[in-house]
Image 1 (cartoon, one colour):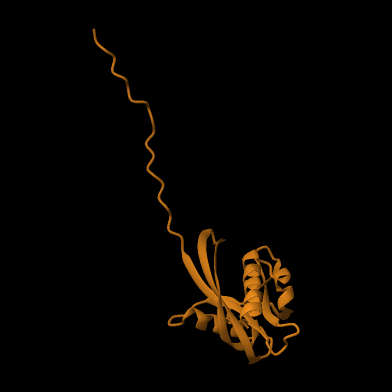
Image 2 (cartoon, one colour; image 1 turned 45 degrees about the vertical axis):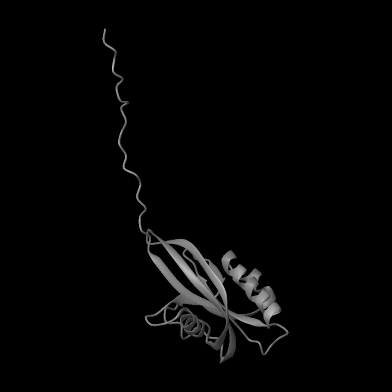
Length: 167
């Protein structure tokens, strides 16, 4: 008597999924505050038009150029996008998020710093990419309600906490 040999189930072989490497972008920016107006502590922010044609208010930021540190890039980007110059006071942290551009999913990391304004006038005229369509001084207390993105609202709250406890 023979014992039937069990047959292997018919399955389709599927190779394990491989992670597709995603492009990484690193930027720097932050808050520049006019500490000479302590009653408001105004922060310079920019507006731009998003992919859906909507105006969004955000913190100035941009790519790090060859040879720059993140704080140097933040200082340059803030000056270019707002017209305001300043010096770094503190690091406010880093945020990371994903977005899609031209069908490619991109992971972006942005380093944020707190700057004290030392001069300049509000202007978007020196923005080399012409992404900023407007610039405004907004009191620090109102900043979380004016910024369009939750992660930047968090950075604004961190700045307020830093100023209240450290300065």
